[in-house]
Image 1 (spheres, rainbow, N blue to C red):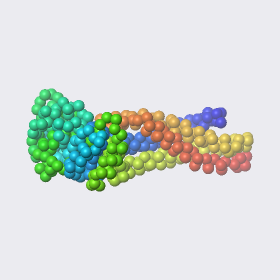
Image 2: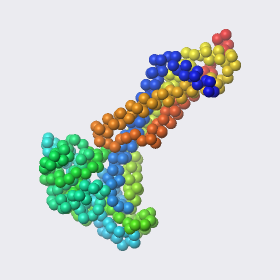
Image 3: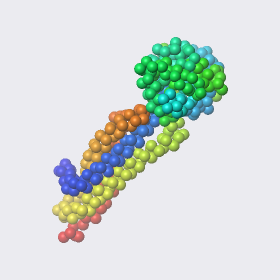
Image 4: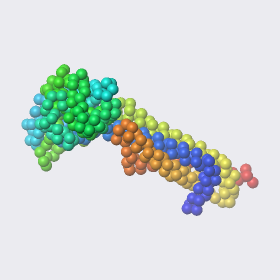
Length: 384
């Protein structure tokens, strides 16, 4: 078996142009799969960035809420009921909405996420929020996400140059008094944090007692799942009680199961796999056909079909390995390019690289197994 490896390589390297075409095709399939899985991971990561930066062990949301972008309000009385449970230390509320942000440079408008909270409570993990609590108490003052897309204007650059930044949000005047870092998502391209009273000024149709998200901070050394179950069993069914990890999965499940985006990315991976399989099959089939006489000669010399088939499979594995390397390298560059252009959290991960490499091996192996059927037609009697 080991002696057949050089033979497999010699078969491939004999036709340099064909080999390069095969490697280019495999690399293309690898890039396609990497990009689709990368976009899918970036979708889930960007959609749950806020969830990951919330202070709280448990999360209370309306049972009618579908995702962060489709929250439904519920009475904060439900949140205050939680204080009666042993193990609960504190509660906080968050208001979520969309408003049109006016670019102060161009005058154009663009929708942006707006998050309101009571400044006296610890709600977010962003250090800039705690540093600007006093400023947020004042009307019109907001914090702007420095990682928002450039379509909102050069807000971060202007602010960091100690120049005042004032514009309109939902038709009301607002002033940027600080920056934080969250980043865009597939739902919105930017984010704003402000006080709950300022939120209600922008959303006059909302009421202070109707909140979107309730955060529950538990006492130290308390079993989170136990308290969660107790609260869920006691509260009416118009609210859901989730752990922070469960809140993250809740958002991921929405994008995966309730939208077409998750399906599209999965379909893209499947298409890349099929394209690569077809390309490798065509190359191996042509290689076997061109060397059918040589294979028949080896059969006449006593070599079994199993040995000859192993040569073709080894060719497939060599193609998989050599094609994966440039595909991986180019994907790294495309990841960086996409991240810089969209600010989405797309990055290479070891687990993903391992999965794609395994898919590449499987893709080429399947092609090899199909191509060896042609090899069985090599009959020494037709040659001699």
